[in-house]
Every structure is written in C-alpha cells, then in structure tokens.
Image (cartoon, rainbow, N blue to C red; front, top):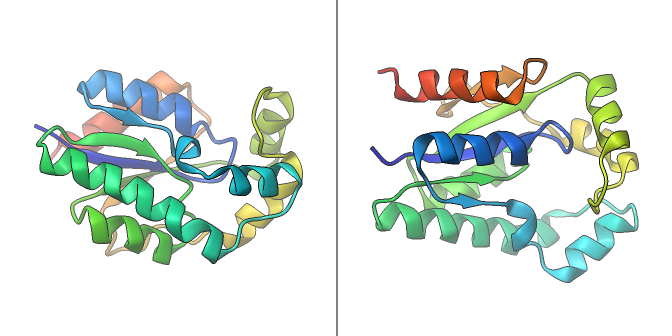
Length: 167
C-alpha cells in the first residue's frame, strides 16, 4: 500500500532522520522539505529572520506538488515539512488530500540542545522560539498522530508504522 506522509514539527525534532527511516521502512520515495526552499528563503533564515507566509506559500506548494505527483503515480511518499500551522497543512492537503501527518513533538530544552549540537544546517537556534510560537498542533479532524521525540528514531518509526497501518 502506498501512503502519503508528512513528518512535521519544529526545527530540531528529528524530522529528516525519522522521515528517511520511515520511507525506507515503507519502501516509499522521500523528499526533504529544505530542498524545496528557494535561496532567498535559506538566506533569510540563516540571517535569523523568520519566514512569513508569502515566503512559505511557494515552498508549501512545491512540496504539495511533489506529494501529488507521487500520489498520482501510486507510489506515495514521505516528505518532511515543518507544517506548523493548520493553513500550511491545508495547503499541502489541497494538493494531496489523503495526507497523514506525523507530528514529532518535544520539549523546548531538548530540542534547543539538539539544534545546538547540529552542524551544517542553515536554521539558527535563535528561530526556535518563533517556531514554537507559531505551532498549531494537529486538530481532531486532521489525519495523523503526535509522537514525543524522546525515544530513539527507530522506535518512533515503528510506532508510526503501527499507527499508519492499523485500521
């Protein structure tokens, strides 16, 4: 069965790691949301300036197009995307209506520590507060699940597979 999954959450929760492992476990194509950002967005974030909705719209539409392409092909796919606000998730669902969101959630101190030890990423720790402020958790009518990021990534993937494949 082909699934369409977005692994979401604030920066530093492990979206890329979990999404890669989940895509391997389910034999689905994988897309990293950061690869869809235009250079102007990356420069803005690297300078410590949060993106606004006009910056995010084309980025979200590009991720949605990738998901729709893989849904139409019958392969499904796993993509990362912060998807912090309901309207952002709505944009993704407009392109691929049967999306399942895996919200990786963690406490501020844990996530800040992870970001502080991360290398080679354009997202500075200073923007973490703005992400937590913007975060709108999944609503009851949104298809998906929330997992705490305390356990190892492999355990999160196994739990995600169980939740996704259990009717």
